[in-house]
Length: 219
Image 1 (cartoon, helix red, strand yellow):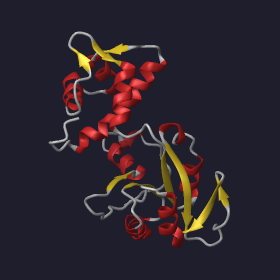
Image 2 (spheres, one colour; image 1 turned 60 degrees about the vertical axis):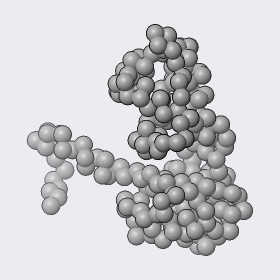
Image 3 (cartoon, rainbow, N blue to C red; image 1 turned 90 degrees about the horizontal axis):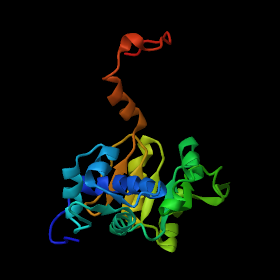
Image 4 (tube, rainbow, N blue to C red; image 1 turned 180 degrees about the vertical axis):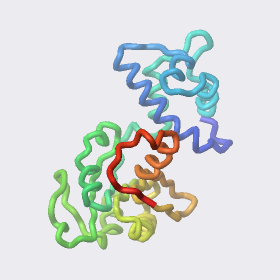
């Protein structure tokens, strides 16, 4: 890997997409793939793929393409996905409950090992086989379990306070579902998921005359 230069964050964001597509190719029994073929599946140019991968070394041979399994293993190694990462989930409402029950994390290297909520009625109960702790226990449990990754699924007005506690406890990677911009130190990485905002960005391209009429007009 080329450690003497800063790798653009957008490149790092694309690596999991490459890994997912390579995993699909491997499951289909495909052993080699060209950058053009991989790009066609993902929706990026072959040049972009080659440029992204060049930050980390040489993984293919001109005219022969990439060995699918080898490249997949290399990307997983770059992303530190050859180990299991313990994850803290803060917020066990409807969204948090769905996240806790989602089965797609574990086989991708992420295990939700601690759940937290501010609602004392939920504390002590189990969700997806894990006990729910009060949010006052965040620092204690994160230190005890060595957690560096967290998912925040709390209301917007509570998100920053929760994130401040997580950061103070040593969490370095936060996936945020609250519709709010978070303030974190430079050494903490955040990714935000805002389904409503994403929907709003797509309705720009739609024809309002064809929309199903609900009888409600929003202003």
